[in-house]
Amino acid sequence: MEVGFRFLCRRWTKLTQRRRRMCTSGGWWSPTTGQSSKLADGGRVSFLVPEVDEVDTAPPENVHKWRMVVAYDGTKFKGWQYQPSPPTIQCFLENALIRITKLDRKKLCLVGAGRTDTGVHAWGQVAHFTTPFAYDCLDSVHSAINGLLPPEIRVREISAARPEFHARTSTKSKIYHYKIYNEAIMDPFHNCYAYHSAYKLNPHAMRQAAKHFVGTHDFTSFANAAHNDRERRPIKKITRFDVTEMGPVLQLEVEGTGFLYRQVRNMVALLLQVGKEALPPDIVPVIIAARDRRELARVALSAPPHGLYLMSVNYDEEILKPPEGSPPISFGRTHQLSKCKLTFY
Image 1 (cartoon, rainbow, N blue to C red):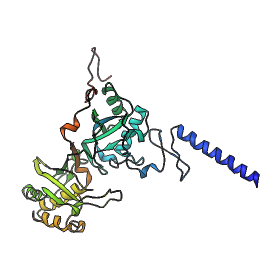
Image 2: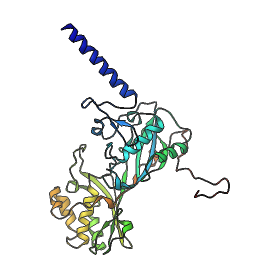
Image 3: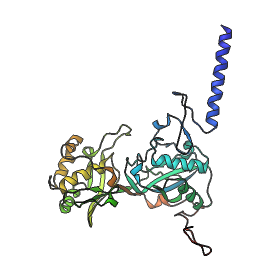
Image 4: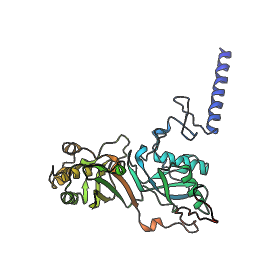
């Protein structure tokens, strides 16, 4: 009996040492499966990681915070929110930052301003991350991050941020665009970036309907349920909703203090039905007042994601002011020829 107990103790010690070796060698061990999985770039990630959407712990006082403005073509990605497979925007950004800073994702605390859905694009997504050290110049870091990212993702801007700045909770408003290509035949160059409506739409009727969205309303009728929702607050304020004709493209631009899951795409879906003259413009306040997603589902399907863009995330000017002594904002490094040479060779 004593021999068997000593044998079990030795086995447990060896197993513990093996786990520690895996952790220190860059892999995270999963206690449920006893395995770790590889990412595309060779990094390892635990099978338990997908349950954690983003690391959002309060950073210590002795860390430095950095703000990024990110643009991406969302066609090939499963949205912003972190998951290693299939890859997301946050996953690629974190992998790049981990390789550059040599920090793990808990110390980086990367947080985005909004969780754009699968296939949705962005020009002005905002995120922040933290490091225990400062940078004297951000141009090199900026160049290194973009060098590690796929061509569909680009960091447009990096700057030092105040400790109280938070990419998500400090948001003042967000602006989304939705593009509709309104011709009988779809332009193939717009195929991944605009919704095709072969029906001739009535922009005037759509503008009348869009006015009913402006103001503070309970948008429960326009929100899809999501399994990972935080406490949902359906009352949102829309400050403007414009419909602009740009040749064959109709651009819908909406600005608000915040949006529920798939709210913009559901509002666009109703405006499309109004534009087809299948519904009158005054259907909008009726659907809003119902506070029931099923009421909208009876008359309109959600608009597809590839026409949607997160254009900008807006903050108060005061909170965007960099701390004293911080390095200049990096907008990317411009290359110049120092001597005559052929640029294509």
